[in-house]
Each structure stands twice: as structure tokens, then as C-alpha cells.
Image (cartoon, rainbow, N blue to C red; front, side, top):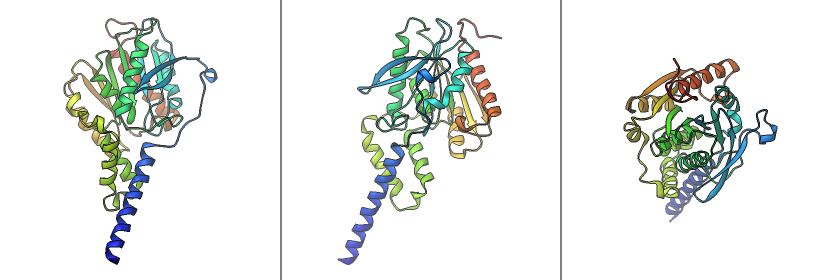
Amino acid sequence: MAGAALLGFALLALFLISGVLLYRIISPPVSGGELTPEALLRRPTLVTFSADGASDEGWFFPGRSSAPTIILGHGYLSSREELLTLVTALQEHQYNVFVFNFSGHGGGKRFTTLGYRETRELLAAIEAIAARNDVDRTRFGVWGTTLGAYAAASAAGSDPRVRAIALDSVYNEPLDFLDLQVSRSGLNVLPLTPTLCRLGFRLMNFSDRKTPPLAERLSKMTGVAKLFVLANDNRVLGSATSDLFLKAAQPRQQIIISKSNYAAMSSEDKHAYENSIVQFFLENLPAAGGMPPP
């Protein structure tokens, strides 16, 4: 009886530890400042949209009238405020730019699903921007990193209006990213903890259980220009990005950078990074329409 009681307590402890760990992963702390549009130099327009029955809003930075729109998807543990310098770099080349916060970020709204709900939020944002009369309604580009990169690739496979995507440190499935976060916590050494976290995550996202992995969808995505950004300082995501690049259909290209985390880059590295992203969109989604610039 004593042994059975001990085993019961041990299992209960593992369930509690796994539950707390999963909650910490899907409910990350709010990062970045809480800026308002009025505090920005180039004041954007607030655009509202709805996904999964919840109302969201983002910042629309106008560029050239009838130019395509580039939507920026922030990464895990990040927010839209950290992308404002990339917004400026794109807007200077006449692009319309839109940024918003994914679920679980920038205000703690709901939980993050590590890509499932975030894809639907991105698609809803595209629909809202396409309803405007001052943009090219048929051409969109999306840049994203980690969480935002998964959503960008996933949305591109569902909406033909997405013509170009830049994927920084992307992963194949949300469960893969969950495994990475569990590993980074250090609690993956406890028996059953990774398995229990995966089980809880699957149950919470049961309606998305049939979502195909990105590798399967990217291999069929022939009409979308794709840029894969591989960071040398992130072995797991770097390997996943490289693997997805090799499996993706043409047109595709890859660049390798030394450090991940755009928001934490030095000014020099950030400037070089922004130039690479801008050049990719200029070549594959010209702001003026027609043929790409020479």
C-alpha cells in the first residue's frame, strides 16, 4: 500500500509539473512595450479583424496607393512593437505594411497555439486588408519568424493572394516547437513530462489534429516565392529550416545569418538583415506591380 501511494503521488506530481509547464509555454509573458499608434513617428491606421470569434486589431502603415501589403508576423515571446524598424525599411520602398499581435502575445489575449490559431488570425488580417480600396487586393507578402514563420507558410498554402513569404527559423509542426520549449525548460528529463505536455497540447488543439505538416504543403506551393532564413546560433530551428527549404517547391532561396532573434540584433546586423528581406520582396513582389526591378 505504501508503494502504491508513493507511485500515486509521483504520478500526480508529474501531471502537475507537466500541466504547469504546458501553461507557461502557451501563456508566455508579455514582451515589449505597450506603444500606441499616436506614439509612432509614422502614424498607422487601426484595422480590426476577427478570427475564431474574437476581435483583434493591428497597425496599417500606408505606402504607395495600390501597392501590395507586407504583413509581419512576430516570433514566439515577441510582439508587434519589436518589428517597427522592419516596418520602416519596407515602407520606405512604398509597400503597405501591417503588424499585429498573435494570440497569447502583446497583452496576453488568450493562449498561443504555436501556429494553429495564429494562421487563422493571419488569414483574417489578409481578408481585412483586402477590403480596403487603397491597396493591391490580389498581392500580399508575409515575413515571419518562428511562430510567425509557421503562420506565414501555413497561410500561403491556403490563400492564393499570398505571393511571397520570408520564413525565419521556421518549424514543421506546432508540436515540434512545443518539444523545443519543453527541452529548453530543462524539465524534459523528468519521466513522462514531454509525453504529458504533448498529450495536453493535442487535446487543447483537437480540432486542428488533421492539419498537414508544412513540409507536405510547401512541396506543393509552386506559385509562391519563398525565402528561408537559417540562423547558425539555433541548431534545432536551423536544421528544421534547412530541411523545409530542401523540401519546398521552386521558386525558393535561402540565406544564412549568424544570429537569430531579429529584435535583439545589433544595429549593423539588423540593417543588413532588413536589406536582405526588402531585396527579396522587391524582386518577387514589386511595389509598383509588373516586372520585378533589375
